[in-house]
Image (cartoon, rainbow, N blue to C red; front, side, top):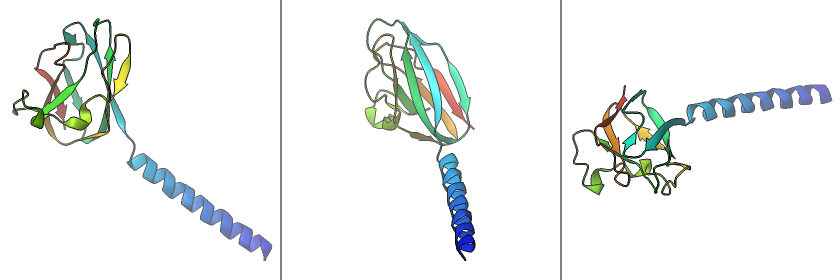
Length: 129
């Protein structure tokens, strides 16, 4: 009887573990790493699949703090209400440092990204397929 109970406990434990791993993989976050140098992003165009992403922004010798703004293409980038706020870095990125955003769900479409602190061009494109 003890062996039967031990086997049942083992099987239940394995099933629970497998389900937990499946849920973790489905909720996995992807990272989009971008680097800023004085006046520009080094990556001008990026293509990714739909999903949830964290933006990782590196400040490569800009000489002052930088940030990150993401906007759906076609919307007025000068209006903060059009910015995707979860894509903002959680704090300004100092020279030689890296900061990340909150998780941001990206749906199919085109987006533009820029840094008003650097300042960079506003025609950098993120395409989500």
